[in-house]
Length: 269
Image (tube, rainbow, N blue to C red; front, side):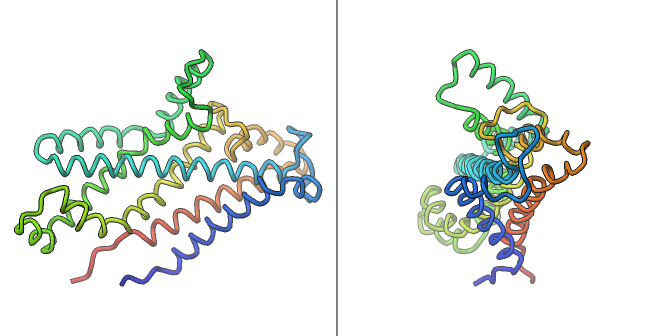
């Protein structure tokens, strides 16, 4: 059994700690932050303290990252599994499509999708999606290609194993082999891919929101930084920006450490 590296535990502890802190501070006990925040009130939002906005934004950014990461990972896994089951020409064309999507600049595509989606929202054609749902769907639509390529390559490697060949020799069909033999070996890889999508989704959302294109309400960390960075020109303005920036860095660092440490490595001969 493979030993989980220390940095994976560090990353998971960072993610879990930040998640619990954002839930307690930003959602369960927000009045505590309002009355005891040592950083004072935000000049751009005088009715809120810096602590309220920073930890509230942390909760929104983490929720967007988790939802978008899960959706893009699920879409990628579905596409890869169907492509491997179909095989042949269809698999090649599906993976070429994934390569084309993977080559697109994520942030620019998300910006276009956000502008198009907000136009639909303004016209009343929201399809049940608010700003949060629109951002999650936008991130998933640009983020599925990477997981699809990784899952397809992983499935290709696993199908070369002797136990898979033995199962097929005994009459096992594609769906049976995938469900009984390949899926148990693929599960740890799914977690690593999901964690690898988490920082990418958070950074993409933060960038788009920072430039004011996404209308995230309540504000995410990116939108909060975008509306408050002007405070840096004033004396003491760093107290407004640095806490949110630090929370964003720790969030991305935790997910990156966990995903890199949990990613499967080739066995040594």
